[in-house]
Image 1 (tube, helix red, strand yellow):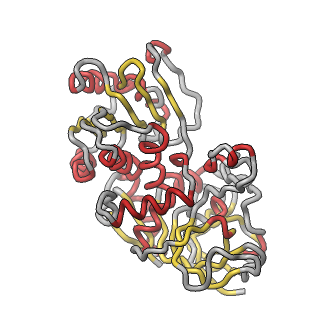
Image 2 (spheres, one colour):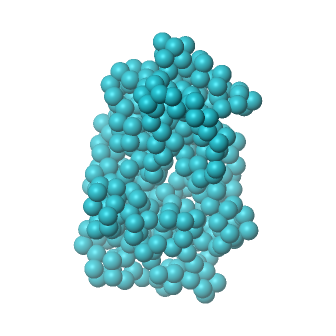
Image 3 (spheres, one colour):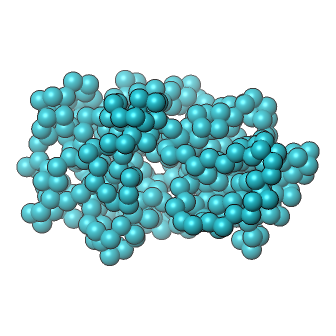
Length: 369
């Protein structure tokens, strides 16, 4: 076993930097030396709410340093992106093209549950006991052992910090536009919330050649930032605007009093779960990107008429198809990611990274190892 450092959630709403031990990989497992890990709201929600100890982090990139005897797709020295939605390839959903909601290996079948995609807990020891890794990855660790299917080899060299955020926030945002909503050229798009995921929704809309991209936020700095990524219009929202109905009126003014073709909710605020429906025209589409998992009361009048509301996971990610596509977008200049990483942190400054995220200072924060 080798010594490593990791951010450990204590199960009581806090975390700390600790020493762990990481074993060599076996079978279809791979040992990765982490180079960068993204910081997002899901990480915050997990250590606050899961109620048990685990190694934190689910976005990351690194280098393969050893492989199990059954591994064939990567080798020592390969640069890899870590992917938490691991398809088994043979279940009902995988066979129907829904690899993001694999019935066998998904780590989000329940909060903090261990799926068949996990590596045995004894591969990672904390205080001589096996410990779970967040989303079967635990990227906020100097080293991690993961299943081979959790890795995507980057055949073209890209910066590790950029690669790390592709594994969740970028894929979720861009994928929700291109693969879920399938935004059409010259469409009008509203994006509610311009954090890391929201900005990638804006980018996806720009890549789709939408003619009008309306960014909505309560933070003027974030709205200003959204213009860099493709927003054509911005609306500064009022926190007291219930359901963002006043914002909806402004959106209609910008879209011929009809409403937008597509609307994306990226705030994660349960009270705004129905808000994207108020923004769209009849027969428009509302997409709930942020993953709200609470009871929401809907005014069914918002559904009139022929409106579609969809709640996708992870932008319908198909790793072998989508990661090469994202890398091509990035290398071609269509996907702006270097500038999106507002600040880079060391592993002993993770609390600062969360503080900056929660205060709205960062589009995206990344931990560098």
